[in-house]
View 1 (cartoon, rainbow, N blue to C red):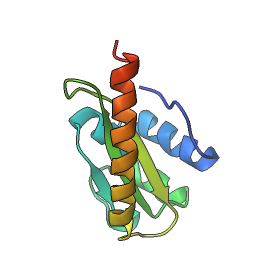
View 2 (cartoon, one colour):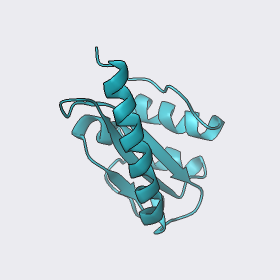
View 3 (cartoon, rainbow, N blue to C red):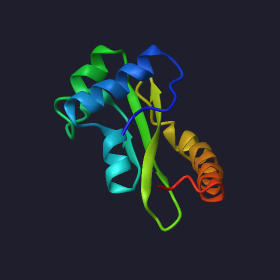
View 4 (cartoon, one colour):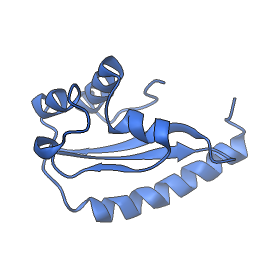
Length: 114
């Protein structure tokens, strides 16, 4: 797995930190095929090697959703990082769902599956 695009250096580093530790919401979303929402990095306990790196990088909350290909197979994940603790991810989740539906249609149409 690798990062296709990142909006800035902090986001790219968060992805590198997940790959380096083998932990984090992106890897979990891609591997398990469902959403992961971290409302507060300070209160997160699921990824003990990744979370301190996220905190040190100034991340307060994370929303990760799988990218699903035709047939229900996960082919990656989309991540939204916030510098603040966030319970407002519900609104972002709705927006991400719309983006994901569009992306999934494009994956299906372009035959991006290996």
